[in-house]
Structures are given as structure tokens and as C-alpha cells.
Length: 329
Image 1 (cartoon, rainbow, N blue to C red):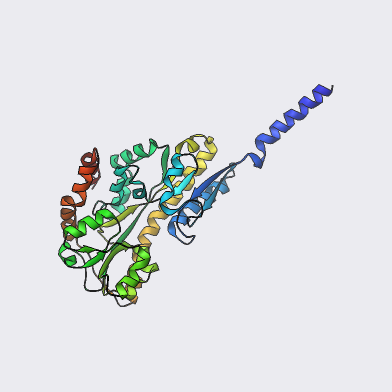
Image 2: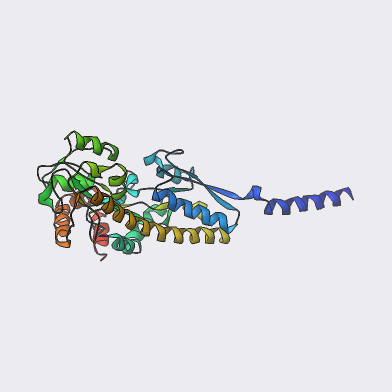
């Protein structure tokens, strides 16, 4: 009798254990952004959708580099120390030089073109490389940027000749040097003071950084991302594949539903950031320039003999991967 009672209690405990919230799975998501940044909000949408689905799954977000430093998010994922991150993929170019193609001048024309790239064989190849590290893309996303100068408008390569310019990424530096510019390397947070002191005449950075660092107070002309833009940076929400595979069907469905909602939001907000930067610069009395498709092609022609050439020569299979990206219209 004693055995029967004990067995019954054990069965009840087992059932309770299966359904108890204490057995719910918690995922850790780390990123470098503040909680007001669009990339944090993308992560929060996924976390909120998962929580609302009530599938014994939650996502704890560690913003502002509070868990891992800005460029140190990728390795912990490959080692099973982190479940998710919102991450500029080019930061992992040291591990996989193919990822440097996700921050390459003139590769992406505009946000709609970026969305087509996300569905292309090119992105399929990038995802295959991620999968080799046990990483998968949950949410695709690009942010755009432009040029601003204290001297005049920048729309074509000849416009930067003789200028001291800051560029966002090594590939952009190569292209600008090939166009006749000199490079001053610095963080976005240092652009304002460098322009104020006259050390810097022009810069290339993201739409949001142009606004948040008040660059409009220092420049005469701004060339924003529009119908075409040179600067696009791929910044997806990544997840450890083995963690995803270990979830049940309801949990996977909740994640995918959240990812679909977050990706639509990401694209919409990226376009809004570009438009908001134009509004802010106009209000500050800054001239707004527009790059034409013909001028965009001029930049791409320079990139072919500089940035693209370096990529192809230094990355095995680089020409094939570059051609795959350039074939997307």
C-alpha cells in the first residue's frame, strides 16, 4: 500500500513537473544597442510575441552590451553560451570573410532591393555558412546610410577628391581612397568634434547616427539614402540552430510568428529612419542632395576596381558569391 501511494505521488509530481512554469525554457538574447534603438525593438517584438503565445518559452534581452561586448556576440553563439543576438554580420568577417560582403559599397541599392537579396541564392549561401557554425537567421534586416560634408554635396566619386573623410567600414575606405579621398578612421561618436575642429570634411554613416550625433549642426550638405544608397549594413536577428531545433512545435511557431512581425517592422522602421534624417537636416537648414542611379553606378564602377577586387582576391569563392549578389535586380 505504501508503495502504491508513493508511486501515485511520484506520478502526480511527474505530471506537475511537465506542466509547471518552472520547467519553461528561457532564451538569452544579447546585443549592443540601447533600448530606444530599432534593433532592440525588433528583438522586443519577438520576445513579446513569444510571451503572449504562452508556450512555456521566454526571451530575456540583455541590451547595451551588458552581457557580451559589441563585436563579441557571434562567438558565444557558436559555443552554446548565447541563444540569440541582433548583430551586424560583417563584425564576424574575421571568422568568415564571406560575411564582409554584407557591408560592401553599392551592393544594395535600396531597401526594397535589400528585401529581394534576403530571398536570393546569395543569402542562401550566407545562411549555409551560418549553419556551419550552428547559427540561423530568424529576422533579416538592413539599415542604410548616406554622406554629409562641411564643404559641399557628395553624390559622385569626383566629389570626395582631396577630402578628409570618415567611412563606415574598410570596404568603403578602399572605395573612397580610390576616388581620391584621404581617410580619417574614428567612431561615429567622434565625427561631430572632428568636423567642428576642421580635421574632418565629410563622413559616411547610418541615417540614425547622423541624427543621434547631431551631425546636421556641422555640415552644409547631406546626401541621404533614397532611391539609391551606397551604404547598407546587414544586421539580422540570429539564433543558435540547435537551440531552435530543440524547441517543440508550438514554441517554434511562436518564434516564427514573432519573427515575421519583427521583420516587417524592421523594414518599415529602416525606411522611416532615412526619411526622419532628411526632415531633421532640412529643419536645420542643411542642403539635401540626391544621388542618381547613374551616379550610383559610378561609385559601383570604382568599387569594382577597389573594394570588390580586394574581396575577390582574399576570399576563396569570393567571385562567385559577389556575382550571386550582383545578379539580384
